[in-house]
Image (cartoon, rainbow, N blue to C red; front, side):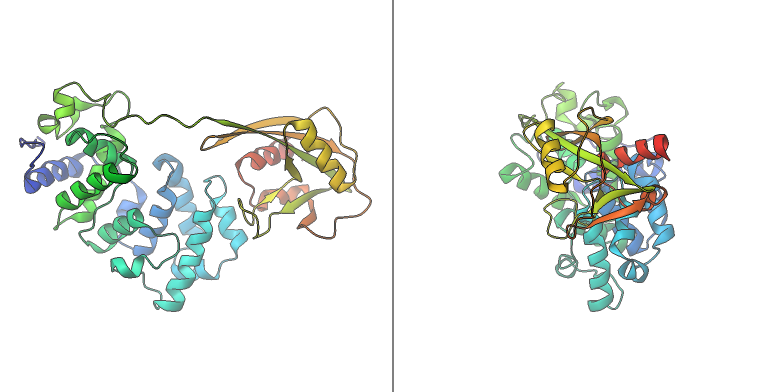
Length: 360
């Protein structure tokens, strides 16, 4: 039987709070692959992948990544394109590049060992307060807290914290509670327990309060205020992004482009020649003019993909082959069968999969 913490929500007993939550976690935690290891490398990889990504999505990527790149040295030596390919489909590709840069720094500056201090780990590329606390507490059992969306939701209901909890004073209050309550004996398990509670029971919609180990000390649940906390922020207006891409084939090869390191987004990823515009027609004309090709007006395919508030609509048009390959810009002729080996971002990857299925 899981105990429940019966304390005033403004002045909880940390030990009773920890005992209730950890007893529940020990009994009901999900069996996740990164919970079967204490290897700082494996834990670090999992935390980088879990940023802004659901657990069920991460699991196969995590397992495949560790199989291909099992330690800091292999990751540090890997080519960027291989790392991006292993990451393909997870999105937010800066995380993959930062992960590789982190491995290189750890090999170069820390003799292949991830720093175990807050000051040291914050020097690692891609590491912020959340990931630092998560890795230090889980891998090294250091009593640092974590605050993510799940933690914010749990603490906002437990302590009736109002306002914008993702920034400013509201966010600071959540961190203060996290620091006050984190277990000194089992900090990694405690942090995972709070996140687990938010991910499985203390849900945004239809929270499973009757199963919660903290039900009797949650004023939001007792007062029927679950839908009020955390306060919903006004969503940002969505932005439609029309884009056009060209399918250009010559002698069994397809024209593709590798995005340069100077690009703002998706550095090092591959794509079919593409451009945005006020509408599809403007983008199609611009592409055709730049490559000096004739592009058909009827699209072969349209795919849709959303990144944050940007709704991307990407249409693929067939086009004639140019007389000569552009001399700059990362263009290459690639055999259709080799496209699968190159890292494509999500929307472009959907074009690739359709072409492989229908033209391969």
